[in-house]
Image 1 (cartoon, helix red, strand yellow):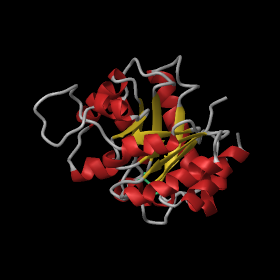
Image 2 (cartoon, rainbow, N blue to C red):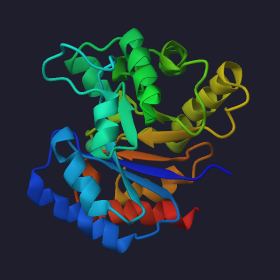
Image 3 (cartoon, rainbow, N blue to C red):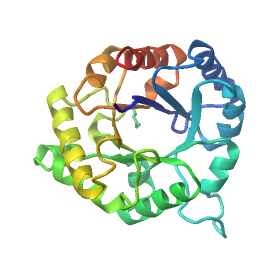
Image 4 (cartoon, rainbow, N blue to C red):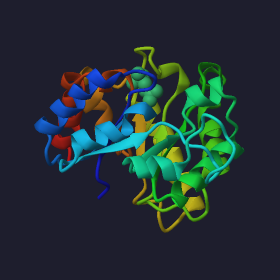
Length: 249
Ligand code: PGA
């Protein structure tokens, strides 16, 4: 049985005062029945690690550079993230694909770097609204998965997050049938790409997950957790999503 994972992506939100939200979560969930990871901006990783120390919630990062070290002003390596306390790193988020022109090849290299530093990689995939309208959603996510997943990816070091671009921050979500269809497609692709790991690898859904829809989304076949943006910034909202996952764990 795959353990549900609830990951919060704070994006470019949060100054030190927001660490109070992490503290509240840590107090509310000292030993959550599902896995919980908070990915703050890089500036807060080490301080959040200290806030969560000794509890059951982990810290993650939102991106890493593909190289181990070097002359890359402003960038952060996977080893630096691990050194700051991160256990997970998001790679290939659609906002980075769009804002920073990240290609599938670059994302594959970042995944490799994440694994090299001992981090769990959360690989984001998802179609745009135009691609969905054209009936290409399943082809797009399959291509993105094939391009970025290393042959040696393991269930314990890799998580896949299906995030339709049109659902992120929009308040719109696919129907449960649409989510199930894409997750089924991804599970079948994993069976082909990493046969001995496919059954154990978590498939998250992300895009406008809120307290009001979390229970329904998390109950869908092959949905093993959620990647949550806006609703992860507030301890009350994020707690409700964690509680929905715990109820299914
Ligand atoms: P959202 O973001 O929950 O605010 O839609 C999800 C994400 O981008 O990971």
